[in-house]
Length: 353
Length: 246
Image (cartoon, rainbow over all chains, first blue to last red; front, side):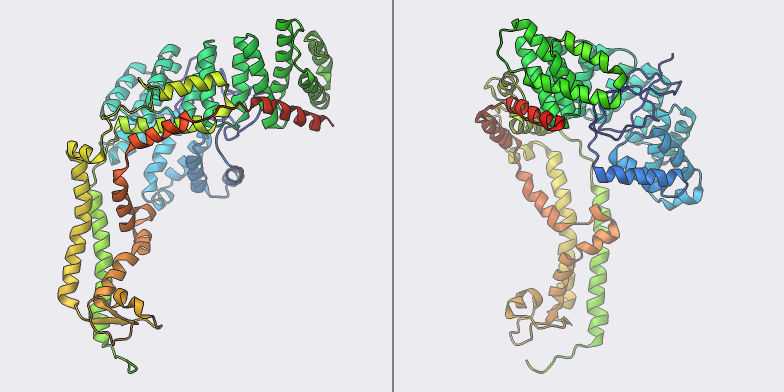
């Protein structure tokens, strides 16, 4: 499959995965990293879409968005409000933005009613179009913007993104570098460079760019998360652990970071690390109210691994693993009873029951 | 004092209303002029980095108990060590903002532009009001006020016998100067308001010294006691699971 570059619409996001815009679960939020969703969108390579998309979207905003989305989908109007909200919350709903944005832009009356916001909309639609690989639409939007703001850096950025979306890496790289020369502290461009390196398969290059970016913008936790995921994919667990520690420091109450950190240090192994991992699995359970299957399994695995290492000599209480196993059984009974035997044999082999 | 002063309607038509209209127009004009003169200032990498370091160090201080002791100690050393810690500001290198201002002519230029766009129109209008309208009693507010308001409402009239509810033209000018902010935010958009008070705040906040807050953050980090909360979480997780199972 041809790798197609994805363009991320928003500055604070450092999403470089090839996630198609039709992916539904973008808003939300803290759910266990259980099933990986795959999409049927053929032209995009959907390699990995983790559900680990954490966005600080409040409940009210989410319901407001949902309501507006339904309204817009059923031709109830309110398209501009929807687009504004998407922009404000920095969501990635490229297909919807493209569709509804274009209906506004193609209607001269509606378009001129926006006043100066018209240009914002052009930019938004252009980025969404790039994300959907509708390069012609994007090109038209950028051309309009170019005409209106001939010397704008922001439009220059869009043009570079168009090059990137076409896959002409060298030219895009050149464009980005010249833009960076003018303003070396442009966060969006720095992020695009990381994304570009990653899209080209140059993972080490991506790490290098990310590190350079984080040297200055070291409080950007999205970047830390990206770096952590890259390190995990390269099996550089110590570095990944550091990144996850950084994430836990930034947002200590998000269970997903605890879970990912526990995964990483469990993988590193060693008695001390295993005990730490177990504690972090436990904190994930605490923070999710015991509903995270992965954390429950993690507890069982840690207990079993610790018991193996110490050959039963340790006097650590095994109570929590027993509880976790019971909770797992309960969950399996409820939602997939056919796999219950599989679970109990697994637990037996871990010597938890 | 008991007998009312009768204000000529010509005063309303030729003093009160023109004064207000002129103040509004000047406010709008000033907004556009300052927009023209504003240079987009490129932020300095060092300042941004210092801000980010402070945020990160603050996070570390706030959430120290959520990471293992080893990780915390490594980070603290990274931030606070005396050789090249991120928060460590070598003595003497701490630039005071005044010196920085003189070393960077752009900064001084910017300040001057800001000041000019604020001071020149104000002086001019004040001179204009003083020249043409000094001594007028321009308006009367419909409720009585105590003597303390005299200096606010009757600036420019040195008559202690006039009732305080009469407003002199110069005071009307000042009232307009400070009271039109709401109107400007309506006309020019929320954040575009030519907000004098905010500008003053900015000016006074100019003396902000990042190296000082770096030092404060370093001291804060030095005294943090690391007490890992995760063992407690384990107990709480057990309780949570028990509750779920029961």
